[in-house]
Length: 113
Length: 111
Image (cartoon, rainbow over all chains, first blue to last red; front, top):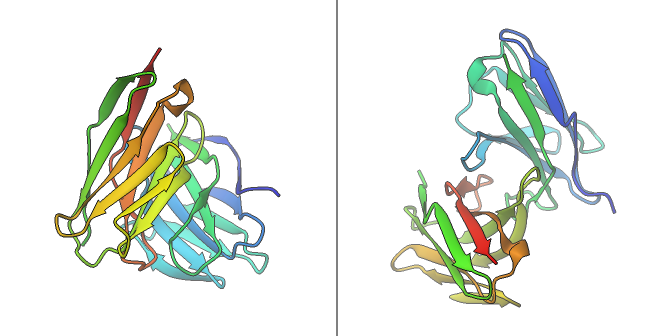
């Protein structure tokens, strides 16, 4: 049983560019949450998708957007990249509509130069 | 909103000894408290969780205690082993979809 898979594992972009990160949830899970983790800090909640809709959003600007597909996979898009967007982006899935018992992928390390 | 504080930021213990990590939360409505372990280059992994209607929960060498009155909860690891070395995060939520995380504790197990 595959766990949560994320792609790509590493990404280098320059300021102003746009990036798309992808996530496939654990088999049987229907809810996907995205987190940003800066070096040495805990994960910060970006948003959660359930039934193809954004269910809740953290304190992130509109440059961060997402999508969930009918097969429950999800994308995170970040526009107009800033240096401060450099971080590990984590995708987590769960089998309920609530943010409990999250299963995380290994993340995408984004570097903005 | 909820705020979670975690201490210590770094904990070094001798192999075989016990380790305790403590967290406090601010929102008395929070009712779910998970602990995650994050190894280098990996995403966080849920190791144990507790709900507000329970005061203590154990799973082999790992236990979590919750004091709702004082609004703090702790992770206890007994008989520590080298593979316990990692960063541990506590979190809290009112089941409103969003976990609020502590800043993490780097646990170092000395041989």
